Image (cartoon, rainbow, N blue to C red; front, side, top):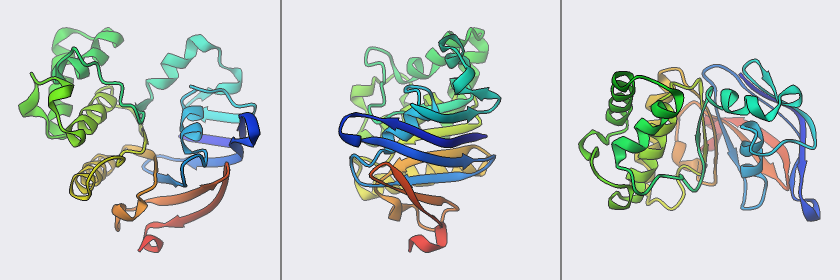
Length: 224
């Protein structure tokens, strides 16, 4: 479970998020929409403690950010699969090595790391690109690689910032189908996007951010 309770994070000239309350429960698929600068990225980064709020509470699983020291943040983040806009792929590592890096960081055995890495790479459609480097992949394939890396630790929730950004419509719809298959297996989702119309009839709950304020919630049927 992810919960924000009256969270505020401000920057100069009033930008940021203001008095945000939001809950993402087991199996939820929550989509945050809003124009550039509305606060979508700030909201997501506050969830995984890239930023600490100026006021309010952030809860992820059993962790409360207000009472958590910085040393516990990596443990909290293991509950989440995080895909930032920049993707942060390691350019001098292959597709397989980018995903296997998670197992290395977590101290897994070589066999466990390999099995988990190959499993998620197969799920995202990159099993035939194990030895390729990120620069050799298309934008859509790079997005799939970032998703695979986020999933390898079996998080309860996937957090993605603009997963459809800079993709043509066909490629973006392929990413939506991939996300739908991940959600169908029970992974909760919290996504920020400006292309909500591409999610079609998927069972999403949509919230709109305007100038840092969460102003609207609607269900999938109202997106048409």
